[in-house]
Image (cartoon, each protein chain N blue to C red):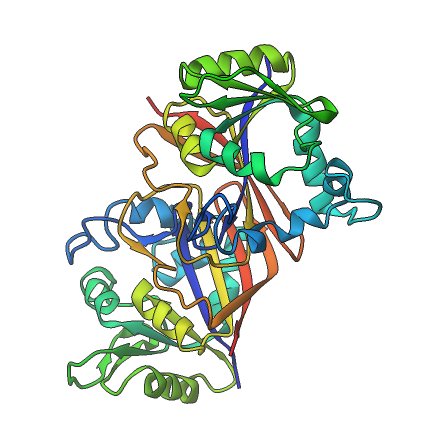
Length: 208
Length: 208
């Protein structure tokens, strides 16, 4: 069975989404500065069909490893609603995506192998379906921040990857606001980076 | 002229001091978990006269470099008041320390070469006195969080060292709460670490 992991961009002041977030302003103000490095990587440009080229250094290797290990994705309703407008018709997931929502909706199949499934019965049910879809590969809790926090506090995450960008958002969604520190324990397993971003890898354990 | 730098321990959720801080509870709940690595380092044990031994790996080298470069320290009143009770009679500074305060008080000389000076005329005046005391060496803005933030927002800091501990404090003083992101810009210059802590080095620039 694969691992359950999180991989998110985070600002130096701890935000994963900026202020003034709306469907028209995906991720809020400053979200672009958090992910500027992503759009320059070769593997991301390939996935988003942005054309040739792109960086092939440590950040690209990091991102390629995240894509490679991911057998299925889970995301919150809000991330889906923002992405539904913003992603191209060939979304970057290239696999099964389970959306936590109260909305009852038939699976939505997109180009490039991505299908969105709408799950109405909670965190654990979504995880079980994602595990089945992933097989031996890993399940990524893709976001947003509130969904990741729920999975962390429920003790359902094995690994946390933070891509720490040297930027301040000054408001928005703080990833660890509300973390249950009696339940969640992390330890450093790897640090890699570039002049643009620092990738921090943590093993996550349930404390009790 | 030396640089002005900050070197602080910070939790994964962004705190430099924990909740329930008081003169009897220096740094608040969880502060110890933030700095546990420090107390194990050889150079710190030497400075605090804790006896022989201690680690001599990357964390020790990091800490030794911080001590070596520091020609003078600046700190806020609250950090001083906590430390006044907690530091041994040979405090770890071994040099001139400038305390920002409204209290008028004669310099307080301690063993081992540390003298605390009480500065009543603000950030820039304290910095000027510290620069003079430091000569060619660097000035460290020692803390606490509020004082560091003031110096950052005033554009008076050249370098920021964060020792990111894999721990959550869940409350207390957030270093970057109130950062003026229109004024402060950082870029990554180095990342070093160990299984215990990740040391992030940033150059700081004034944006405008």
